[in-house]
Image (cartoon, rainbow, N blue to C red):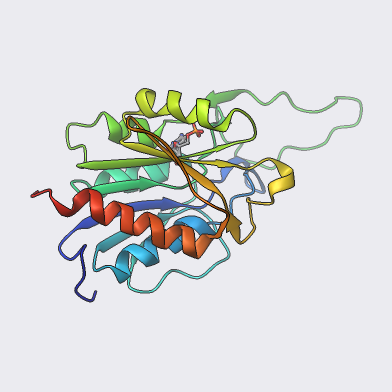
Amino acid sequence: PKAGPLTGRRIIVTSGPTHEPIDPVRYIANRSSGKQGHALAGALARLGADVHLVSGPVTIPDPQGVKTLHVETAREMQAAVESLLPADAAIFVAAVADWRTESEAGQKIKKIAGEGPPALQMVENPDILAGVGHHKKRPYLVVGFAAETREVEQNATFKLKKKGADFIVANDVSHEGGVMGGDRNRVAIVSKDGIDRWPDLTKEETAERLANLIAERLRTVTV
Ligand code: C5P
């Protein structure tokens, strides 16, 4: 990586969705494209950071100048993130599936006439951000994203404390906005100091502003 304000800083970024298998051919997923997380990883690398991206299944290419690990499930993402600690900062952009099925069927679940649909027993996935936010090797800076369809900022404020994050990047992913999968984003930065509302920007522009904010927060820290 080239020299810049983040030279010598090790930063973990998660991006994309996770896929939670139901059986060998089916999975639970969400509409995350990975565009925002991958753009942020690239922008941090351009500022000189040693960036480790942990990506769920996406169709976009690995960003340049970044070390990318590919995972599928939430539990794989958690193991990858924890294996990358310690780090100076960790930024959790991934849209991690909240639930998975309790077990993965070894064979394709058959549709049997007259039996009706299978009852899928769901269990909660680990919260990767909360785990790192309260970790004994907690990075100096821990940042979460909050994709909400309602009460965006109130939900982000609540998550800040619950997950042990320094700030939460809140965005509205209600259908009208077209954020999930789209190229634009409008975020608010929620921290203990209050709420900073950014204008509607491309995900690349949002990534650059976020990378600068992260550089600013790490500037005075000696780790
Ligand atoms: O609770 P919610 O999913 O809205 O929180 C969003 C933030 O928490 C994001 O930064 C996301 O990457 C992170 N998260 C996580 N592991 C989960 C759920 C969310 O790291 N299981």
